[in-house]
Each structure stands twice: as C-alpha cells, then as structure tokens.
Image (cartoon, rainbow, N blue to C red; front, side):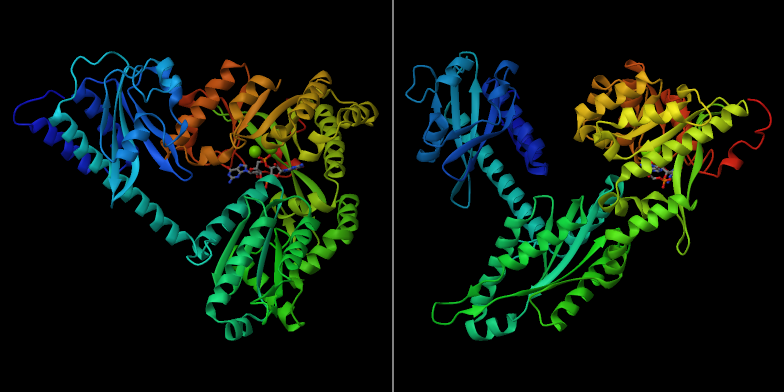
Length: 600
Ligand code: C2E
Ligand code: MG
Ligand code: MG
C-alpha cells in the first residue's frame, strides 16, 4: 500500500477489513496491509489468555526461519507486547536488541524493530497487534502511522469481539446454559455419529438416560438455587467418570442423557452405569437440612437394540421409568435389549455356534471387476446369517453384538475353512480367481493367527493353491496394533496369501500405512466413492489415494461404485479395479459363475 495524500488507499483497505467476516482472513488482510504501509516484514496477533498469558495466534509475512515462533505462549508482562498491554497504547521500539523489552528468543530470531498496539473491545484488552521488522526499518513510523495502527487495532478488536460473540451463540445453540452440558440438538447429532462408527468399528454404543429421584423435594425444600447447583454437580461428577468422546446432555429439568461411544464389551457399559449411580449417592443441602440424593437410570445398547436415533432414547427412557416404578436408585436395561443381551451374554454363543453348524451362516460373493471392461478379476466373500426368525442378516446387523460375547476368531476360522472348500471347488472347475475374505480385528491381534492359517492350509481335505486366497484387514484395526498387523501381513505373504487394507481412508493414518505395511492392495472406502460426483474434496482425496498406491506399487480397488458417473471419474483418475452395485451385488456362489462347467 503506497501512501498518498488523500489517504484513499488506506480507506479502501479499511473498507476491505470491514467487509471481511472470517477472522483468519481478516487478520491476513490487516497484517499484510500494515506491514506494507510501514515497510515491515510481517505482523502477528497475540491473544490474551487466562493466567496472564499472551499466545501467538495469527502470524503473517515473517521470514520462514522465524515461523516457528507461531503458537508460542508468553507471560503478559514480557516484551514490547507486555509493555503495550499495560500501557494500553502503541509502543514502538526502533532497536529491539538494545531495548529493555528484548527477549532472547526474538533477538536470536533476528527481530530488529517492533511495534505493538493493544487491541481493545469494550474497554478490555483482548489482544496485541505486533508488527515486526527483521531488517533495520528504513523509515520510522510517524504519528499518522501510529494513529492508523490504532484504527486498525480497533477494527481487529471489533472482529475478535464479533468472533467471540458468534462462538458464544454457537455454544448457546448446542449447550444447556445452566450446566454447560450438550443440549438435545447436539445429543442427536452425536448419537447419529456414534451409531455410524459403532457399525464401522464393530463396537457398541450405550444410550443412558437418568434423572434425580426426588428432585422436586430438593427444589421445594432447599430452593431453586440449590436445585440448580445440584444439576451442575451432577454434570461435574458424571463428566469425571466418562471419556472425552462420550456425550453428556441435559435434556430438560433434571433429565440427563448419556452416550457411551466405541464400547468394546457390553459389561463396560454396566460398569460405568454403576459408577455413576454410586457417585451420585450424595447428601445435598446445608449441614442442618441435608437431603439424600439418588438417581434412576435406564439404558439400551446399540446395535443389540437396533432401533434408530429417537427410538433408542425412547427405549432408554422406558427403562428409566421402569427403574423409577421399582423404587428408584437403580438402573434398568431396556427390555427388548435385555432379552437380546441375555442371548448375547450366554445363549448367543450357543445360538451362533449352532448357526455355524446348521448351515445358517453362508458366504455370498461380490465380484471385483476391471472397471474398464467389467470383467471379473476376483471376488469378495461376505458373510450372511440366514436367521430362522429374522431372515437374511448382513454383518452390520449382528457382527458388533458378537464381538463382545463371542470370540470373533471362531467366526474367522469358519470363514477361512469355507473359503478353502470354495477355492478347492473353483480350482477343480478350472476357475483360478482370487477369493478375498474379511478378517475381524481380533485376528489382527492374535499372535497365533498365521500358525492357525498355515495349519488349516496344510490339513484342508482338497489342497488349494494359497496364491488365490486374499485377506482383507480393516484399516483402523491395523492402526490400533501396528506391530501385530505387520507380523500378520508378513506371515500371510510368506504363505503366498495376498493382503488388502479394507475401508481405506477411514483410518486417519492412511497414506502413512502404504509406506509402512507390506500390503498388496487398498480398498478405497465407499464413503469416498459415494461423494465423487458431487464433492470436490472427495475427488482430491480419492485421487491422492490412487496416486499414492501407484507410487508404492500397490493396487487400488474402489468400493461401492453405484453409478456410471462414479465409474467414469475413477477411470479418468487411473483406478482400474472396482466393486459395487453398478457391476453386481453380493450373491450366492451358484450365481457368481453361471458357466462354471466351462473352464475359465
Ligand atoms: P467390506 O469388507 O467393506 O465389504 C463391502 C460392503 O459393502 C459389503 O457390505 C457389501 O455388500 C457392500 N457394498 C458393496 N457394493 C456396494 C455398493 O455399491 N453400495 C453400497 N452401499 N454398499 C456396497 P456387507 O456385506 O454388509 O458387509 C459389511 C462389512 O462386514 C464388510 O465390509 C466387512 O468389513 C464385514 N464382513 C463381511 N463379511 C465378513 C466376514 O466373513 N468376516 C468378517 N470378519 N467380517 C465380514
Ligand atoms: Mg472387505
Ligand atoms: Mg470395505
């Protein structure tokens, strides 16, 4: 920005600032404009934090070797910034190293001159705007320049103030103002998320509601203020007992709801519930008038109870009223879930074991094709339960429930045994295509898994060529226990079996995995494919997964291709293998190779 007599460039600059709503973009414009106006190198915004701290939040235009100063935190009595804060006016230091404010790390970083201006809103200093020179300033800021900085600081102050107000409004929209716990909106948002991850990760979600047994008496006898204070105490005590990923919500009055996410074992839910019940057996009120507090809880466990959203909460509520009817100070599991859970805790082992023996478990097959020609290159085995009363069940409907009570290894062993029989059948008919099977997380953690696999290969009634067996490991399970995963992958490959990382891209450490694990292929998770046509972000992600796979000599298979448009985009991206309803749905074995009598 050049100085000119009318100051019109400055006014234009201020107009730009006034129009910018995004705080970080706003600050970039301010920093660049100021540094330019003063012949400085850059500017930073130091936000005032609790405990007398100033923290570098926004940092612009400073030469890169000094970039590491960003994010640092200083005591607010230090440096030029501290001086400006306490003086509540701009302070300019022309020779930083020789000034009384010099801080060694900045001298070392090469700071030559500094100008700090307090950023105020409603009489309070919210931040410090710091302008830095890493070369000797060619001209010193005159009075007009300092005044100008004061104006810009006021703009920054209004922007920060606006930002904080917006944050508070957002907080109000998602939290209960009295206790600060999540409100109903946020609760359902989190519940939706918890249910999706529960299915993906084969975990359970506990949905719990509870209220205070004699809250009305407490309010009447101790007054509303003490009643309100008890609600806050309840929130604090419960928060101490749950993980950061769990959600505590106040739905209204003295009714709370809790989501326990990603639970592995059913019993863990009951353990947390019992702790909460105990932690809230307190006496409340002044020493002379103490009232005993207790709570009633109702709960249900997804997906053992496979109701959705509102219905889950309703089920937990039904159980809570049951707890109240029975006299309070207890926890009751929702009846339907209770019936199912009883099965899961004991009988299911028998039921599932029988299901395996009685042929209720079957494998369906979905072709993996060459995207360009549609030709089948291999197939994936997907388990189905032909349940006598509930019909044909897909894994999301029963796998998570099995995980906690039933050793998934048994299931995996059954699948491998079946796969070997099937491969022997195919190879007998001259069909030499790879069959992929899915392994559960427990197999990844099992150190004897490769030995078991080797034993099964050696003793199978009709020998098969193991090069046509492929295993799929869910990516997140390999992240959880990377060393076991590596040992398993190496073991399988030694046996001639290929290894794919399934649901790739959902595990957060994804691309890193391609380098560190010796796998043959990745299966790009279908959630990314679903968004290909509409979402540019998904396109960028999918393209980078394909590129990375190519760079490491690994095959990329796109999962869940449903439309011709997705297929075209994938082809243009250089992806050659795919799977999805567009080509074929999972089907019984006899439909997969209709011409099985013909050698392939
Ligand atoms: P996965 O290994 O990622 O399998 C692909 C899933 O996507 C299958 O669901 C398949 O039916 C579905 N799918 C395929 N094409 C499309 C499509 O175009 N659109 C949509 N929306 N879905 C498509 P399925 O059979 O319900 O299996 C779910 C998951 O359960 C599997 O995900 C796998 O992780 C697990 N699983 C399946 N069979 C077994 C098994 O035998 N053992 C173990 N441990 N896990 C299994
Ligand atoms: Mg799979
Ligand atoms: Mg998958």
